[in-house]
Image (tube, rainbow over all chains, first blue to last red; front, side):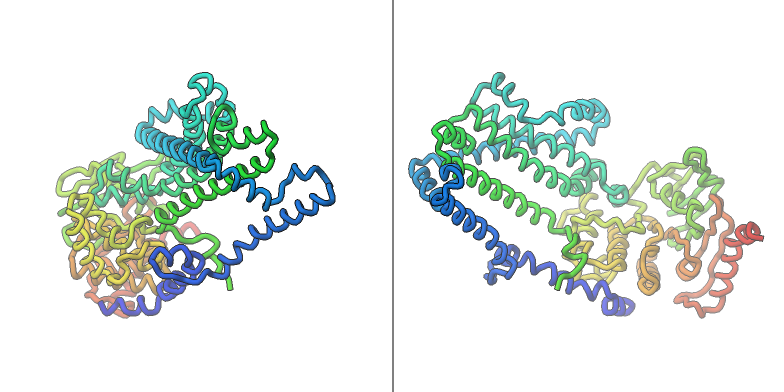
Length: 303
Length: 247
């Protein structure tokens, strides 16, 4: 055991380890510390991040107010944020905003979950059964480039204007990127990992559940993130074509009655809702991929 | 446990990798396979592990032909091949767990192997947080935790810096003396082979060129009587053709 001492003491990577951990903690401090219940002051970077948002709306407000008096173009076309706030409040009091948010969230959540689940299931089956992959891949490469939105009118004719075609459309847009990325993840598992699992006595099934799947998770999450963006556009378009609730519906309804401020309210809400879902996904990623380190942040330390 | 490699040959397409290889490894023996890169030494090891199969001849353990990877033959890889999503302790308890040991007991067993390699305080670190030498210690502990009959090591210290490498060689020798496993160790370093092994098998162009018994008492150093001579003799065998080719 005496042999050990020198390495643990002198080995530079070992000594550097604590420094690296400390350095990587700072950017995440706000998120990781508050989880532990420890209250920390907002970091300089977190406070700085708010300023662009504030500035954006301030400039917009000033511009719209100026336009209101100078009449560069019809002031109705670009309402000021303050007006949006009061119109949004009026809209909220009718209950339509909450209803729409709930309706849209449910559609996204279901569509996204179904699409992801189906994609993972097929990816697992395809990587287990070579035959299946041989038959499915060509069809997939034929169908997957078709923009999902092109399918919507067809879905409406087939399934009517209820919830089902909307959820199906979102599921389909989610499905393709998750499937492609997860498959790629399965294929790029380092062979030494599989070999070492086998030499440790793992069965084929254990190799799959304990090596292949965790190894493919990073790719799966990349697919999920691509899908989330696409499925939001699917959601909005689906709600614009034949719906009686949802954020897309507010936009169409506002267009029909020329209520431009309501249109803006819906657009901003879409942005907020997307950020919310994106944030949830990022949170999940941070939890699941806690073992992952590296990237630019750790490549070069910033002063 | 007796490992016997009998008249083994292997081809990849038109290329002959191994030819008429005969080798016996006895219980508790520490054997090094030494050779230039491309001499087929890793291929031989991969066949013993069960990842590849011989085209000619047979490899048997206690008379039974090898049919695939098995927990009886533990492997330590040059790139350590630790599971990056598992902590150090989870990596080491992987073997016992997949073999059906209850999780708690597997963790305890893993803990004792972790102490064996001196990394108790790193149990809950991820591999990415460890240095190269530490990763390889975990790799060794993980392979040992499945209590294999033979430990196969494929240039395990090849990617380490020279000081860490010396340290790891001493470590491995210490572990060997404590547990007395059977070890088949592939390397391209003559000094490493002479330092570690009871027997050094020199391979050239897919064949066994010579086998040397290293009778030097442990602990060995470069100054041990006979160490330099053994290195020189092995080097002569390894370099013979190369010098003829140059002449």
